[in-house]
Image (tube, rainbow over all chains, first blue to last red; front, side, top):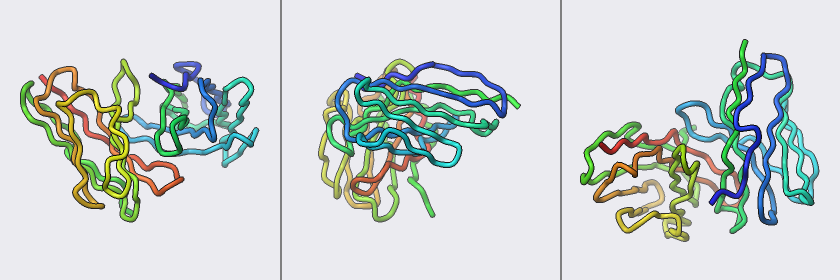
Length: 111
Length: 112
């Protein structure tokens, strides 16, 4: 079964707009990771946030974590067409290496 | 830097045939993972190795699936006999302990 559920399932925006996607998970965690998957490619790690962190930034990415609500959000600012991809959250309830991925959000950024 | 290399990229075969998927992890990585991705079930961890030893194979769907890692630079996932419901994209990933995983570009498997 999947640990994380992403919301929305699909998101369509224009270049320059911000994109926010959310992830909810079920069990307690040590950290939460976000990955991106371009069509026909493997997943690429974007960012990791630890359970004692509330917010983390990396370039145009901002991740928040609310352990009391068991949820995380990924914000992509000033989106570009190249950001078009599926985005997945992942947790490791059984240990750091054994990742459980969410259902993913498909992001489409139109020029 | 070479990433995780998987072969073949695409495989089409008839049910009942043996299928072997191959993976070369990033040099120096001591963890190797096999995943399966389908529309219905999403991305599922099948098995993972540490230092060539299988650690957790609880995600392997049934005895028709087997995985080996004879050395640090090579792993195989075998399906015998294959069935149409095995059609999926199979990913290999590798990592160092405590570090994020690096994925290959997958093998798209179609069983007719």
